[in-house]
Image (cartoon, rainbow, N blue to C red; front, side, top):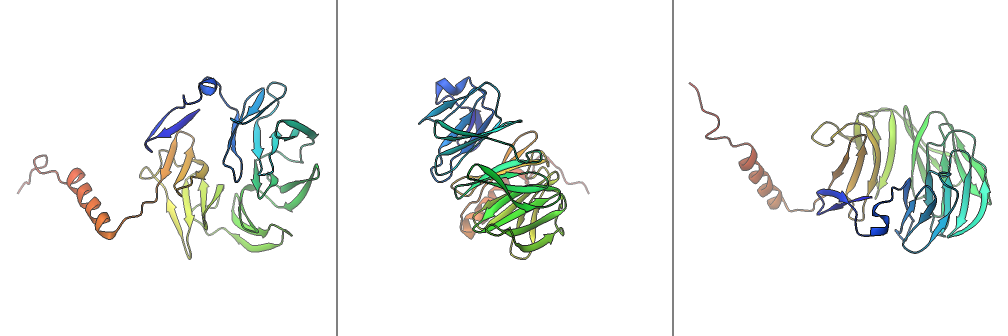
Length: 266
């Protein structure tokens, strides 16, 4: 386990010594409470409670606001109510791309469908092709594909917006809702949907590697981008025009004025 210190340093988390030597298979944040849940090979736990199960059986954990814990493995799924096992479930058809929780509901995404868990059964909410990622804004699900994105109604799966593939990168690997904004990840950078355009972030100015695997945000609205080789952060700073001007002026003096290093030649 690692965490960031002073916003600029990633170091091993030694705060909970009993967990310092354990390597989690997956980590989930419970919706609304913000509690961290850790999935290990033989148990899942938070600082409040824990559950145990056979070694190496599950690789994905989700926790909703009702304290339902969904554990997903390669061959089966289990549903817990806190530490008490409720039932074993069958896997939906198709390989898991990602699982999600939104407003207490659990979702399972494959390349051809979105499933919801209802009364112990997986119900198909939507069918599609080459699906890669989803995110939620109120009653709308935004669906990323290998060729653009579109959105559907969460309640009846009706299409709200048709597919848009006029994007900086149509092959979407990740979608993340941050406030009212949508961020998209791809294998060649990330882009932000604005009112009438997309703002494209690519190259070493922003990322250590353009292959964006995952996106998340914190309570401050800062955004974190996981690539195949590192963790990157886009930080939103509130400042006056005078403060911005002073910072630019300071950067110019520190990094771009080379008197004494470069001589004029006539």
